[in-house]
Length: 69
Image (cartoon, rainbow, N blue to C red; front, side, top):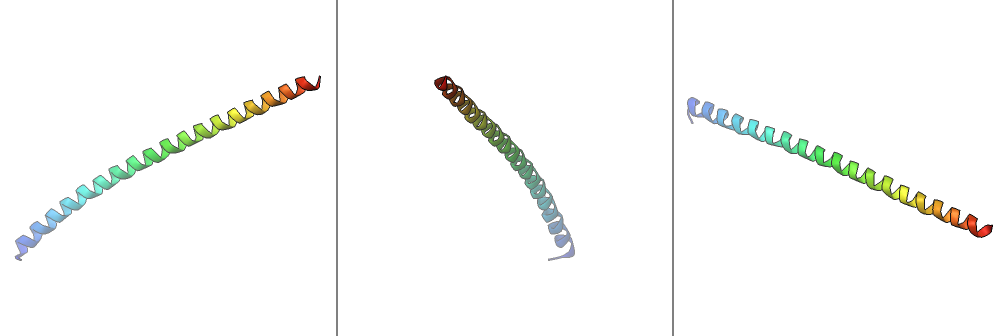
């Protein structure tokens, strides 16, 4: 390869590398957004589950107290 061909190939590869880098950054941002959404969904589900369990426990406590009277 001549010097000019090598320079052209380096420029082509640099451009491809830059595009790939931008794609990977975009994919990383997409994954991070998805991770945050999953964490938020999991947190909401855990809070909802805990609230349900608390309500069941409170209802059982109140119904048990009523039976004792």
